[in-house]
Image 1 (cartoon, rainbow, N blue to C red):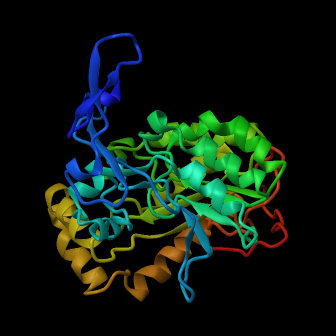
Image 2: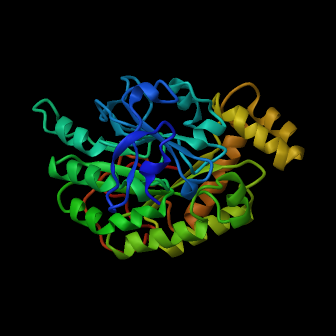
Image 3: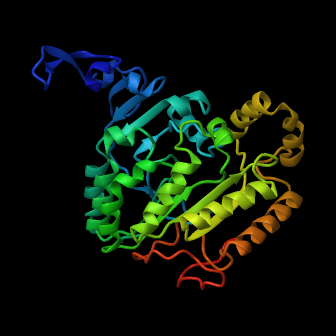
Length: 362
């Protein structure tokens, strides 16, 4: 189905490219449903039922992280805002309110697409002032969410970064990344590259409830194996661990066991972070799916965003145990800070040394 015909504010456009009669064209910004800067058109299509895409032309896509931030990177690129993965725990939900969307349903269903991201990025990276700092992707919303299959923004972004000599890191739940493995292999011969897969549970049924728009845990494990077979390093961000849902010894043992089998080069794990915007949406989900846990969560988190010190200490101990059991004690997980040259396909072994420049993570 041609997306031009799905424009929500259509205007009469040129003849269709398949030889048919004239069809609606992109809606001009003044006809747009929302006052988004650079809006070209808003599109809804049965292929993505319930999701509206707002195509915008961006003036800049290279974002400087504010000085003093605790983030382990200085620069980011986010080709999409909002995410159809619809993870109920997503920490980035509140950022959607900056666009006058809500942090709940709108975050899942109103996706902003920077359709000129690759072209703008290439221009920005060509400036004499650019010092080739590492650029992180997947820091706010997933660059390989389902829409990437339609818009294919990442190949151009990867080429722009590699061609400019800029190291980069990517964190994703999206198996669409497999499409770009040949491109990533080539980029890794030119610049340091850090790839990470977000996977914190192996329970397929629970994953279908808590992160309903993502590829299944099984599919992501296969992606890890494909990356390793291609000679690419692949760390795992095993976050968030959900209290009373994915923190049992059985759940953690299953997770670390499957990650080791898949060949993950390292694992970073930690508890659910409930910042404002995320907290309200997650607690609403919890009340509907696990009402017996609502009181426990309120006591565990109090009025803050973090679990109690006691729980954090306990969970760190269990994570340390399973990292040791499966050979991850002295390996580094994924944190957007370890961009490195292409690696061989071997999985980590117990006692394996830390790569130069890496810092051990719990």
